[in-house]
Image (cartoon, rainbow, N blue to C red; front, side, top):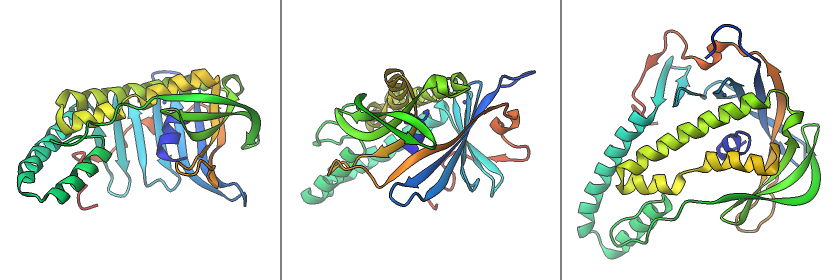
Length: 284
């Protein structure tokens, strides 16, 4: 799945003593016409913790303890994004924006207009620019039709953003997926983390505050959406924003297994060195 789908629509996961079983999932991209499946992600959910990784193991993210931890096996290092880190980053970004605004006085009008449009696209505003966009509203509409994905029969819904169709969801009842409560707990933890990041951005005001206001609530609204549709999406297929046509590829949940997951899957491996979150990012 794409990032927003993997987290919002499939989300959409500590241990002490004997743990209750968790859930292991695999996600892939399916070419509808040819039936070609390309594996993409593995997810592990258990007792409010979530691990997401690419199938090649190069990209690993842990959601735990109100933070996101990015593991880099190639350098045996990790980075932590928490509220304090986001606050520090937001402060630096606002300082950079203030310096940019000071230089705008000498920029020709046409170049200034282009820069303002670019900033508006990021959800921010600059002096003389239009107000930043409002936060998005997410909803779903019942198509009244059925479908199938990954060997499961499903009911089709349309996901809406600001009243416009964004994705077609292939939804199965939550009761048909063992261990669903663990997944829901994990999604709630991820949503709480997202809310904290939003708060840190908004508290800073300026550029990052307007971005935070524009981006906030997607995960929380995604959880509310799951309650409305009464189940879990096992496949998502995007609508083209220009034509309204369904994409040629859909994201499919190819595996869902309830099983006990080793607590080490949610921990930072021994011997890993912590790096600052933005360290070396400019050159990558």
